[in-house]
Length: 284
Image 1: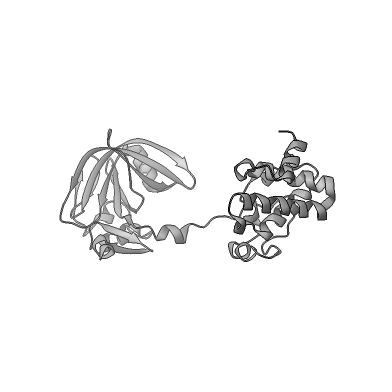
Image 2: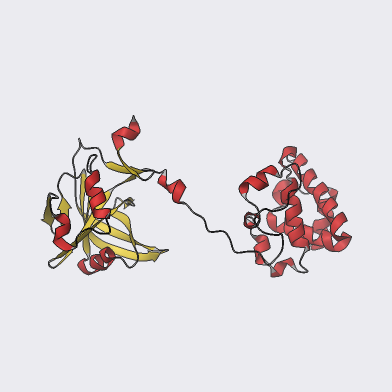
């Protein structure tokens, strides 16, 4: 469909909602602004979008602020195709807070984050800390051994990757001593802690903990072919390094499970909302 045909169909009301994706919205808004000017072009865009919403049985879906904000951004440039950000449906999040947009459904509201102009500001960084803290995760101590050197750290990012072959993943900070030694050892253990082993989790998460074998002082453990294993853990895995790759500020480590043991009557220790909790507590 040519540009003229698209605009004609839009104004005639012969397009369905599924025939008006965002890319066509950009094309139509730009064409209306060029053909009729900003004021009349916006009026025609509003009428067309209201018609689309009504024909789709969703007349209440029309949003005053979103429609006008998009039009102002699109109409401000000669060739929208040269501004790829206009084809990003989340673009308005760089100008408006969610609360501001929600309040602008029935009336026009100016943006509260940035003025409506191009080039667009960089996307706001997403902070997932609060959301991810609400997801309970198992707490484990990952340990490894290279010759006479041993090292361990608390992790809470364990995930089953595959049953056949048995693979497990865990995330380690890029540049960490644990990652360096694990690569050299080519093997590691995961001791998934049991409810009540909060002190052990805190110990191996402490940046000021002793190095080497001193980390394990007063912590019952034994040596396996894959590294140190903590006694009393709910689950104990011995792994060979399968692969590892850089991902953001961490490395994802995939281990091929070579030994696995679990104690049926032990509840695993979980981390939830920044606090160590027994799984039985969350169930209650």
